[in-house]
Amino acid sequence: MKGQVAHATLMDQLRALQMLATFLGEDVLLQRISARNAEAFIASRIESGLTTGTVNKDIRTLKRVFNLAIEPRGYLRDGQNPFAKIRERKQTAKNIRYVTVLEYRALMEAAGSLWWRALLSTAYCCGLRRSEILHLTWADIDFHAQHVRVSAKESGSETIRWEPKDHETRVVPMSDETAQILADLQADAPEGFPYIFIAPKRFQRIKAKIETGNWNDRKAVVNNLTRGFEVIRHRSGVSECTPHDLRRSAITNWAQELPVQVVQELAGHSNITTTRKYYLTVRPEDVERANQLVNRILTACRVTDTKLETVATLQSIVTPFRVVDGG
Image 1 (cartoon, one colour):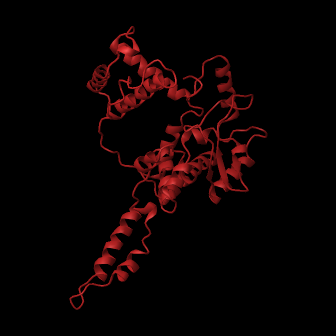
Image 2 (spheres, helix red, strand yellow):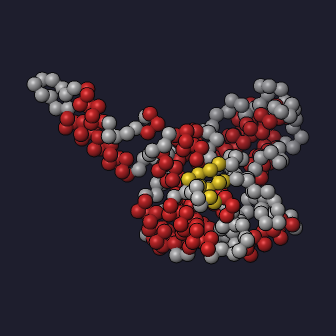
Image 3 (cartoon, rainbow, N blue to C red):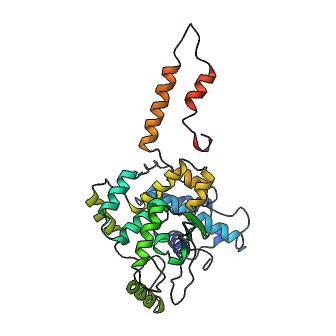
């Protein structure tokens, strides 16, 4: 599996396998692991007090690993995946935190430094993941076309090995505001240094750790990012949110006008279900528009001479309220 998946994914797979081996015994043969064994392992994970989300991640990870043991490895025959029929446990869906434009403006006002303004703007307007933002280089920014390219980086004298979560290169739009802030940041950037958000001194420390074998992809290339964001959020007066909520909000904003399959591509989701389930939310203004729609329908559909208004009338009422993605 090494070399074919992201380092973080590989670590998750090794962790899950080690826990399974500890539960069943190190010497158990793959062919002897049954669905009953798998269910007992998952039950033990639940009993240990883990969250449903963590347990479900274990199920997905082990199901994937055993599938690899079947195809292409050939260690098991078809139908021998003990986790194949184990379903993920139901969990209450978390509310998606939508950051309004006014809240975004407040965060930008409180950001202080140009570096932070650039990071917040890239997250909220380009919808990038934290790691995607931090690994951006100036070569990824097309100021003329106003887009940002998210692409893997090879290990080299001037770059750190990194790969996007979906393992694919994609291009996302860049707002006028984001382009201007990045241009201002570039004007102050060290000559010839490729990274936008990783400082030269931090880059040198990372490279030194890589050379001595003391670095892995799960370590933060920029320290104290969450803490710094919390300082800005508190200063701005914006209610609790995270840097990832800025990405979620960008995706929700795109969905107001773009087909969901386009939003999926811009977001870098391999599965459209992820886009729908975890990233699209109802904004306060959407609730208000829905309320206006109901009021307009009820007002227009009054009984006149014992007859309702025509369907054409209803169509004229509903038309201004454009439905995105057919429903």
